[in-house]
Length: 79
Image (cartoon, rainbow, N blue to C red; front, side, top):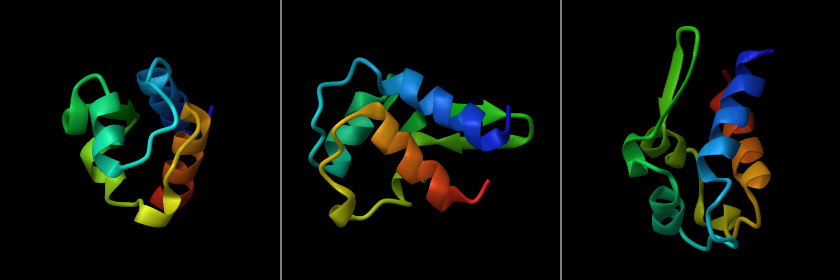
C-alpha cells in the first residue's frame, strides 16, 4: 500500500461515523476524534487534521462523505 492509500484509509476511518454533509472547516475538524490533533501516519509521513485542513478552501465544502474528504486531502498533500 502506498503512503497516499494508507493516509487516505486512516482519514476515512477517523471520520467514518461523522454526520455528513460537513459544511465548514470547523465542522470537519470537530468530526475527527482528537480534533485538529488527530494524526495520520505512514512510515516517515505524519499529518495532523489541523495541517490537512490548511489544504482545503471554502469552495471544497460541503463534503458528503469520508472518501470525498480523504481524496481531496491526499491529492493536495503531495505525499
